[in-house]
Length: 213
Image (cartoon, rainbow, N blue to C red; front, top):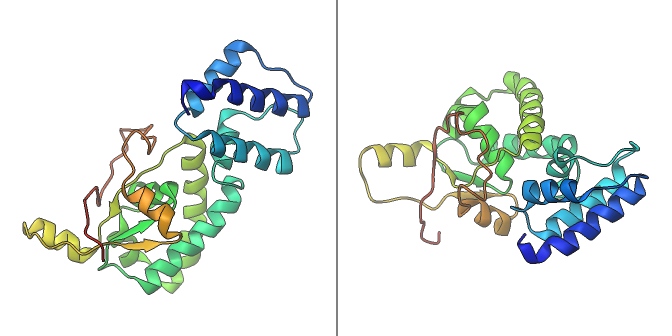
């Protein structure tokens, strides 16, 4: 959002507050705007509609609630979907190919909580899958609420080896999920990716300009 969106943003917040029998102050509106300004106004509006349809508490939704609902649905619902998407990608793509998921929270979870794409694939067995799903969903909910997201590429084994040898050839990554959204994640800047916790290491992720596959 830009400063030109402040009036529309305020209208959304005031309308949402009225639904819960609450009011918002000028200072509160300013803080919420600054916390959410990295998102498009349409995304904030969609999140407010999602909250109206699902939130049962009689209190004004917090910024953390908005972060959960940006992109539609709450963090728990999205975590279940994303866990299944990752498991399917491990099976169908494997560790050798670099990948880009269409959800920057998923990218961050794989990179930070599971040590990158290669390590995740190597550790994933039928026996470990149910444990992965549980741990992934817990991490996804936490990362989503804290606004931790990553763009770029999760390097596969082949590309990691090529980069390590200084080779020029780089195969275009496999896009997982919605292609258009995955392309946005691929080119996402650090500021857009909301790197809130810079102390957490980010293994096996690079931003590379790829040719079309």
